[in-house]
Figure 1 (cartoon, protein in one colour):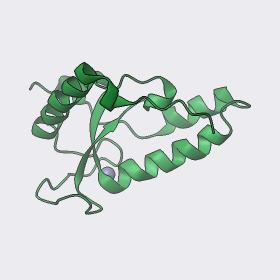
Figure 2 (tube, helix red, strand yellow; figure 1 turned 135 degrees about the horizontal axis):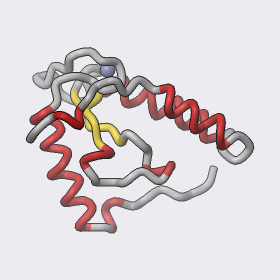
Figure 3 (spheres, protein in one colour; figure 1 turned 90 degrees about the horizontal axis):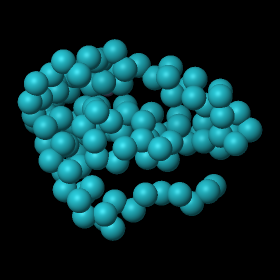
Figure 4 (cartoon, helix red, strand yellow; figure 1 turned 45 degrees about the vertical axis):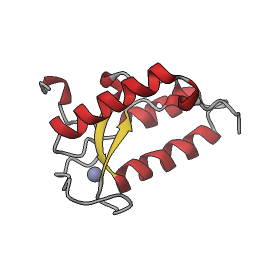
Length: 118
Ligand SMILES: [Zn+2]
């Protein structure tokens, strides 16, 4: 596996922007962007259905680490399942880059968070 993780803790501004936008996502979104079901925000991590903030395009794929347009609300379990799927896709990334991109696009993202106002 290539070692190309972005170290958020070494980028203070990115970290601050992420925390701010994460709070906005948690305050303005109520539905899991991956499965489309409501998220019960009274549940606390590591509950399977606790609210998490997911990177729509993972950092490993060049997604922005803190921009609100790359963040969405997701259940803990949905976030993990998506990560697992992308990790497996990543194993084949070099050989089948195009196929991997299709796999990312196949993830359900029907929640229209762009119309939400903070
Ligand atoms: Zn979900």
